[in-house]
Image (cartoon, rainbow, N blue to C red; front, side, top):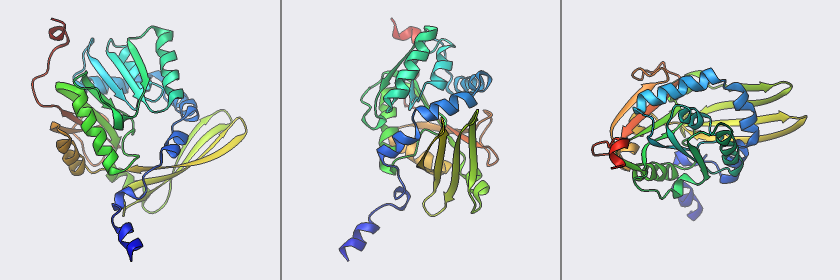
Length: 276
């Protein structure tokens, strides 16, 4: 009976959360190898333009690229004169981001850090969590991350949270796996993704073949409806939550992605005013 009670105390949506070792296997140098080949400069530039418009970002602003990976979006923002600080839990990806920034002498620095342990207070004008980098852990962990991001922002600072549209994922899955394939020559990375409606999570088995070596790993991602995400953001301390689609227009169920834009209470301070 005790064992049954223990099981019931586990929130259903959390039961598929990823262990840290699994997360490191999914977002590693193989991920960088395939994704950096699949995302060309035009695609990256379009996403950076969306972030700039949605977050009202300006040159000289200090912006946190949270879960930055190898720096794809952060470096693009830095090319537009934004002062970027990227953090990620994977040291190899952080090292790659540093190398890329140094190669172009960009205004960007990168550090290894866990967003659950982020301690910066009022250090940034804006923060972004881009390209489905949120929701792999437990609900409790995700909510801690949102609270930490709110603390890290200055008054009036904006958060940009870019996730998949859960309605689209449900419609695409319809009880059968979605296949996502990335190729580089004869190498490939294949995701077989299903949607677990009882836990509101995407579940994927990833197969990687690179240099004739094969490995498999799994990832699990929490899907958040706009109403639930708005509640989480409010409880973390954010106000004025808005939702956009991946084209920058107001969010609609037909959009593939969901961009939440929220701000911290108080008036926003211009970069020039902070230097006085």
